[in-house]
Length: 367
Figure 1 (spheres, helix red, strand yellow):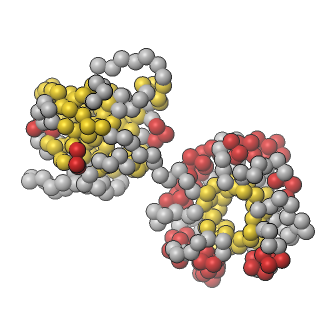
Figure 2: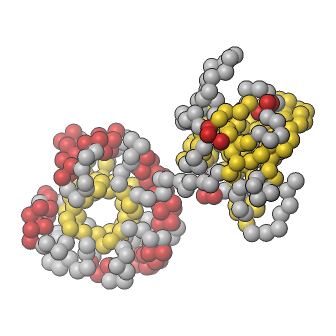
């Protein structure tokens, strides 16, 4: 996860108390205050960052890090020599080319660089991240809200090391923590044995076109039941009659489940431009990708039944065409219309039933 610093410097007292409790509960890494007295209630698991609104106080209190503006407070290195028990960082406001160079220098040399970009473009942040590629310090970028924090975490794929954000309400700290989780957990895929296939007539299927390039061993997990899915490969592999479309998964009938954000499932029919779905490779590694378009069209359909080693049955309904494919052990690409009983495909067995996409521990029979 990325670093999350919550800025409480200008919060009213009533909101401050609630926000601090939420920050501790969500295990945010840092709380930023202008008054050292605000650190008194914090446990030692939270980093205390002092960022004065005015002059430096005579006593830093329990501060772990003091972030200074050199024009007002002096150079961080000189202050660190006077206060060896405290870490110092540099605040830089980027408004033009000279201040951008100051930010790059800070990111290369300082332990902590807190950066405020006045213009909405993220190009200057890209330049700072590139300039600090070999540094050991941390870049903390100030975000206006959680939406901007999500963007900052993804700039140049590496993202800023952390975000500093002032909450506007209770719940913002929780959303910031969720946004900082840039990596999705891996899944334990299983080998499923095909037990039957059947041509089931016409229906609507969905092609999920994403705003990303899939790898050759990567696709989406799709299934008719919430407790069993099969790994459908993307169109990264050549076909004789059409060009590859490495952004696409011909995913299946519109009633089918796929995995989305926050451990939820989504029906293929409810995906739209801007939705998030989980891409999965044959090793079980995952990442969230953005849907750019969903194409729902009437096509002949084929039903594939399979069984897991523990006896769980799995069903997948796909477009009934040779070029629609799934993945097997060893990343073998299998044409769906050529599957026969005894063939093996890769799948995933979620442990919970679902209610409106959320996992829930209740009785639910799907067949």
